[in-house]
Length: 250
Image 1 (cartoon, rainbow, N blue to C red):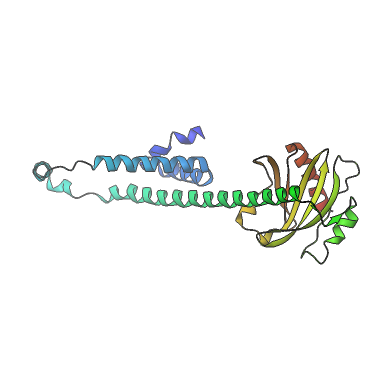
Image 2: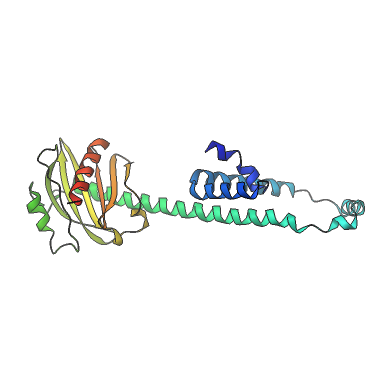
């Protein structure tokens, strides 16, 4: 990223070659850090320009300057407007890019907050599951007719996880499955929803993150969106996620 940072001011001033301008522009489109840096520099330039306009020259001063400039030099060449137009386009693009990135971040944060709320509700419930069984062949058929999709559950025989049961959960007003697993004294919720029913915050590659006191893993597979959340270690969450991913390939 450092190799690009030194070129940003020159890029904004339009002083790079056409090839370098294109290279920097392509990089800014794919780098949120540089895009934010460009926006900060644009705002600083605007602030400097505004400060420079605080003091306006008098009419007499303007007249003296005009007399010292030849008539031929008064007409500004078209070339002056080209960097300005390019600058405006870059500013607009960067602004739209940052707004889009921020909107996706807000949607993602909102989605994971809802997942955490569902998990907390389960932890606080006196009856956390509607079907109680450690047998996946009992829990999975229970969801038939209750959900508009099917899914596979992993074999836990050689793992440290125990299936507690499951129930129907709702996210973005869409029904899904919530499976409860236990490892040692920790309870883990696994949520499965149809990906098309969720908003943009649910999209993206496999993502592990920490939400307040919980570790969360989310991914897409076979048109379904999975979320695994619990207060156990990130390694435990990842291990259960791997088992679910393998079951989804069967």
